[in-house]
Amino acid sequence: MMVSYNGLWKIMIDKGLQKQDLVSKAGLSSATVAKMGKGEPVSNKVLEKLANFLECNVGEIISFE
Image (cartoon, rainbow, N blue to C red):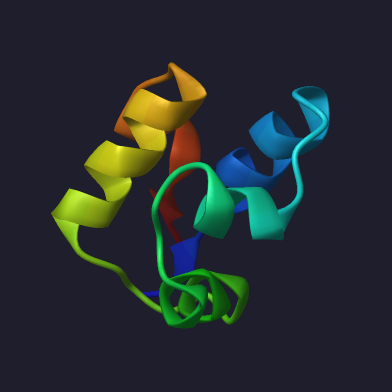
């Protein structure tokens, strides 16, 4: 099963955000952002942080293929 963050990237584009904003503003590590860029799984805590930062729900950020 593959993890897809296409929802995350779309939301970021819509909000005019870059990956660096996830590090500087959402409090994620650059290693975590790199993992997501490669489609690797991240913790639920990371997904919660993202959802809170982007004001959306986790289901809008991630999907499984």
